[in-house]
Image (cartoon, rainbow, N blue to C red; front, side, top):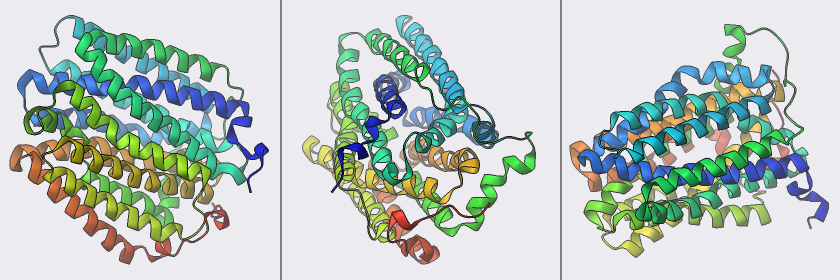
Length: 410
C-alpha cells in the first residue's frame, strides 16, 4: 500500500519539471500537426514528410555523444533552459513562415534541422535530470508520471492543433510560443540541476564512456536496440497526413484525431502504470508489448474506417507506453549517475533513429510501395524483431523485479 508521502509530486522540483514537460509537449505536438499538414499540402509527396524526420535526426547523430558529456559536466537545468529557448525561436519562425503563405518546403526542412540541434543538446540533460528529482524507491512512479505529462500533452495537443489550424494556421504557433514561455518559467524556478553531476575535462575517452557501458551491459543494449528496430520499422506516425487526406479522407481535423489516438492509449497505460507499477516479469513483458505494437500497426495499415484506425493507434500507443516506461526505468537503475547523461545520449540516438529516421524510412517506403503496404510490412517486421531479440538478448528476457536492479560498476 503506497503512502501519501510516496507521491513524486510532493517533491517541488519534480512538480515544476512535470508542468514544464506538459506545457512544452502541448506546444510541440500542436505544431507537429500543423507542420505535417503544411508540408504534405505543398507537393503532396510523402517523401517530404520523411525528409522532415531526416532533418531532425541528422543533428542528433552528430551531436548526441558530446551532448551526453555536457549533460554530465554542465548543470542540466541550464541545458534544458537553452533547449526551451531554441524551441521558442523555431515556433516564432514557423509563425512567420505561415503568415507568408508556407508555399515552399525547404524552410520546414531547415527548421526541422534546428529543432534536431535543440533536441540533441537538451534531451540527454532533460532525461538524466528526472531521476535526481525523487528518491530511487519511487522512481518507477516518477517516470510513469513523466510519461503521463508527455502523453497528456499528446492527447490534447494534436486535437487542439487541428482545430486551431482549421480556424487560422497562425494560431497554432502563437499559442505554442505562449506555452513554451510558461515551461521556461517553470524550469527557471527549479532549484535542482544547478550543479554538474561529475567533474573533469572533456575528452574523447569520456565522451565514449556511455557507449562502452551499453556495449558491455547486455540488458541496456537489448532494451535500447529493441526500441530502435521496432519503431524504425513499425512506426506510421509520419504517414498519418497521407492516411488522413488520401485514404480515410478526414481532413486536418481528422489528422488531429489520428495524431491524438496513440497518445490516448499511451495516457491510459501511463495512468495504470503510475497507480499499479510493473513489479514482476519486466523483461518478458517488454518483448510482448513490442510484438503487440507491431500487430496494431498491421491493423491500422489495413483499416479503411476511421473508428478502427483510431482504435488500432490507441492500442499501439498503450503498448508503446508500457515499453517506454520499462526501458526508461531500466536505464537509470542500471546506470551510475555520473554516466547517466552519456548513456542517455546514446539512448537518444537510438530513439531518434527510430522516430525521425523511422519517419524518413516510412516516407521512402510509402513512395516506393504505397502507404498501406509500407505500414503493414513494417508491423509484420516489428513482430519478427520482438521474437529475434528474445533469442539474442536472453539476459533482458530474464529481468524480473525492477527494484532489484542496481547500477553496474563503472
